[in-house]
Image 1 (cartoon, rainbow, N blue to C red):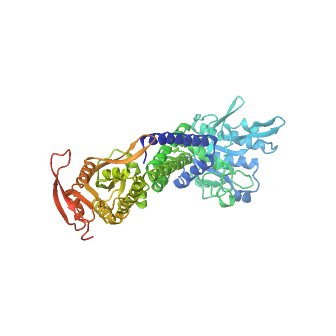
Image 2: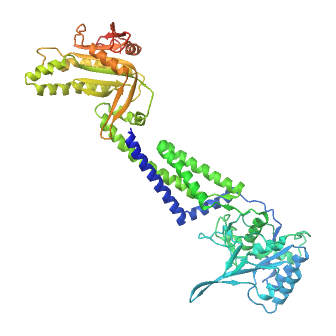
Image 3: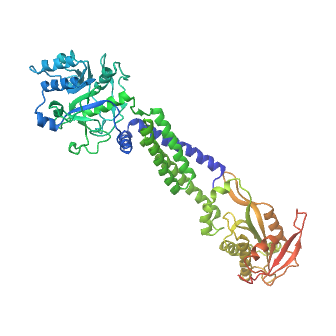
Length: 606
């Protein structure tokens, strides 16, 4: 149960908590804490998508373990034979993913002539890091000049390796000093297309891998050298031929999103030449993956944070958590689909983590505020409602502050007939202490009967008591509850006679009025004090009937008069047999008469 003031106070804390949680998540994302799990999420996208058949005209010539075993050590003279064979078979571009930055006196001229005759060979260079007295310096190590002068292009083969050892991106052009260098892949495409490709400088591009090892068509080098009969005559015609090592000894093996194990024996690592083939395929097909911008990532984090906040504040914790898990699942599915079909790589971990952090923060705050409100409610209703009904009421606390329609309930008024005159008389006799003692005994007994039947004591008024059944906790048989409570009070009159201070002069007589209908239940007050109350004509009618019960024409053996309106009598008699006598009664403020019944104190049939 929250007052408007407490709601405003809680709203301020909610906004502050949400903002703080969002700022923390943004800071964690900026610091790179999500980088590792984001990489795993990215890799999982490839695993779920599966491998794709390459659509680019690329053939790999692999200097693999079998080739080394069959041919022996590959020298530059051997490379020359490979170049000449590929050129004679119509390869459009020949790329040697082999470093040629150290001299070999006898074989270098042979290879240089083969490169020059082919006229379409692209060579590999690389950037090298060296430690000097002035720190670590980077230098460009191209092929020897004898090869550069014969080649159609030279490009670097360096690839950015992330901290977990996996290569997920490629740089097509980069600067060193005042010079700009193209990658081997960009140079190959330039020669193949006869025009320079769009190569952003110093900007990593996400590689759209086709698959793991051997996804591209691969020919062992020894088969090409020995002229294997099963090779198609036009296998290399018009295609890009990439020559490179795939042996473990060369240590040119890398982890990619498709890598299942870092052990090369399990064929999980991708050779450098296969990596270059994937990048060339992306360039030719123009299908690099597009990474989400920082602003897009922040927007997705904020969106899932808002949804997490709604689940934390509007739904029960268990269902909220289940829906949150479903939200994260569906968002992840959308991110994977975006990667597979739109080539847009959306962040998966940072938005999901944001929704979880915001959900946890606001759920914690909600729990703290709810427990505080529950303590207030317990303090407000404790002693006036049964413990089990009080716990039920806690589930309806939010409704008491909302503007609602009338609640169907039964109202019971009870007080001692002629008590005000008797109090004056006892005070004149110096029996104030006896009056207070009796009132405590009387009210304790009356409240106990009301609470035992599931009613709520709405108000104590000296010797009077106002109780309501069916509110604030709804109950279908509220009229029957009220009648049974009245019968219980009537039965307790005999016991109360023993403590009645004026027992020798007057018999204790109680008047009870009961009426059923729609009431309005509200919590009224200021920031210093709140009170649960009920209002409406039903309350007024019950009060008038209770006042009418003091009429001298009513008398019973116990001294307790119980009057019910027709509405209450019909509802209660539908549940148990009642014996009653009807009277006409004109309630104040009403233009028509209200039929009431005089209810005997004994219940004929439970």
